[in-house]
Amino acid sequence: MTSNVSQNYPYSSETEPARAAAIERLLRERDSLGPKLAAETTPTDANDRWWVWKCPSKGCAGLLHVAGYARDAHALYVVCDGSCAGTYLR
Ligand SMILES: [Zn+2]
Image (cartoon, rainbow, N blue to C red; front, top):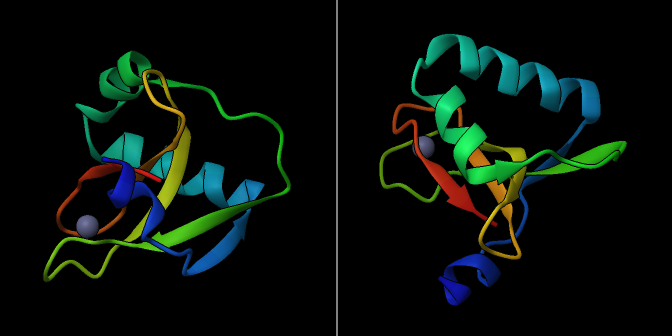
């Protein structure tokens, strides 16, 4: 997991309201995401801007938005807004 975390450079950044809106939208669209985030993440702290990454899945054009901190790892927990609907650590 360590190399997976470090080899991915941010693609862009977004404001806190944009990040929160993206995660809210994904929570509405995906029933399983809420329980998953509750179980696997702790909330983000206050930040004005957040990094955004391109999804690493082949064939997925999605972007990864920060959903919180991973409970069991020193990493950001990110959610893809594209077709793979995956979650990753950054
Ligand atoms: Zn994806």
